[in-house]
Image 1 (cartoon, rainbow, N blue to C red):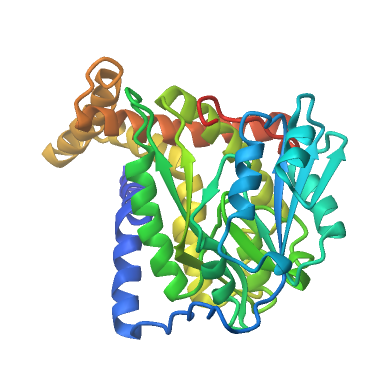
Image 2 (cartoon, rainbow, N blue to C red):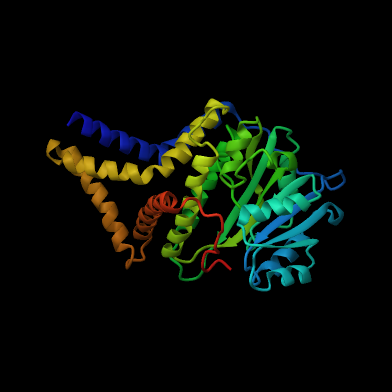
Length: 377
């Protein structure tokens, strides 16, 4: 029973660490290290680098025109901004709508996946910096200037902005609460070893750094660039807005697809090979990514080990009751809309989505194409 008890407490400790004590440890480290100098906003009267803003799109006729108009309206010199829409085998009016809205270049490509569309756009892009956005993501007017300012630091190879999700009326998805916590952790990582993942809604990368990442995904850029001594940072002033998936069921399907791709990145980008990383960045990856992706297994170990230890004393009865209470609250959250039940349901469902994504990856590998989450357009 000693081995079972060790397995239980280790699983519990790792779950608590990835969700709670990791962030607290970063906050303590950031306080000890002091505040890193933040990049200055690029001044209006100074020479700004040319930027190619690339929007990969698949069947986005409902939003692509608004996205192009949003990009063209950014507070950035028009002669230094190139807007490219890379249509990944769209079967609707995406290409026509993008051209009518005034995109500088619209590529009508065969269906090969988001990253292939990005690569094709990069080959045609003229900008010194490459910026990327989802088709349904609308940027604040000064967002591009804020992103560009991060590259005044020559050590920065990748910068992502802040996405704010708008919630549909009547929706029960709790992604917004989780995302606010995630962004706080990301801001701490950015001040220390560098962020451990970006997001597709708003990010930029140096042109030469783009080719350093063999996978070229939201998760893989920080992993690859760290090995080349280039930092990946979070720029909260660079704001973008997207619609949130309305329901927890829809969020489960979105996260399941994301995680099937993420496990492909774990394998292809070498997440489990820390060679070339700083010790601090390796700690961040282990705590924030590896343990987070292992959390379904850790929960199963904790539950089964706890079940075997019930006769070993009141402590194990209490911990088992706490686990059962979480599952019961999640089940009740289907019908009870009170916030605690909704949060419990969100947590259990999103943890299950990681396991489902892993299973999908084992069976079919990482998907190369992507689908739009329902309710986000």
